[in-house]
Length: 292
Image (cartoon, rainbow, N blue to C red):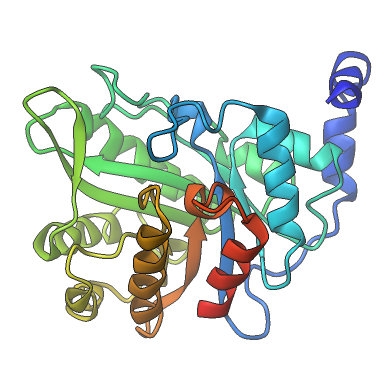
């Protein structure tokens, strides 16, 4: 950590230099599958894992877990915000990896403006300039919150800008609503996930470079019907699956079934692999890779 701070203080240009010499790879390898580790949660103020409210707050610990995950066979790359990707570039951890920049992080967890999710992260021009491989954005649609309209419009323009640069963009759509206590909850029913996929697939002037990042439905048996909504390629997201070994095993089984579907090309999973209930990051990552 001391060396990272020293380089950032004295040689900030080292980040761009590290990006320029990074050894790149195609988005998909020979088997056409993707295994991406996600770590873009902190920039939204979402630091919790299960009942550990600040689990992701220690940056040295997070970077150590990320470097371990990226070193495991079958892990294709990482999804993160600029601060984390800059650290990983300086650490030399991104050669031969898919690098995905997280684009909209303005909808802070628990904020009154959470669903007016501004694009405060990577811009398309940043992803292009740094030689990264893709972008990712979150699209939560609450029919009772006008902030969702702003997010919809800015999402469409981001898709356009990425398509102009021939850069893939992974759109993570949800139908969401607030609880009586004001917390945003995503609806994982088959109907809601179907509707969110339909909305996301039609955004922008071209869908040529659009991928979907979708959850497994409450009833995993519904996934085959839900994924018939679009021909866009998709990856499954992990989310916060709970804080027990039993929850972890249940998540693996849900992913296993959905990964057999024709449009599903892989996994993008974060907290459940980086902070598994038993603490064994390597084993959790290896198990997820095995599902592919």
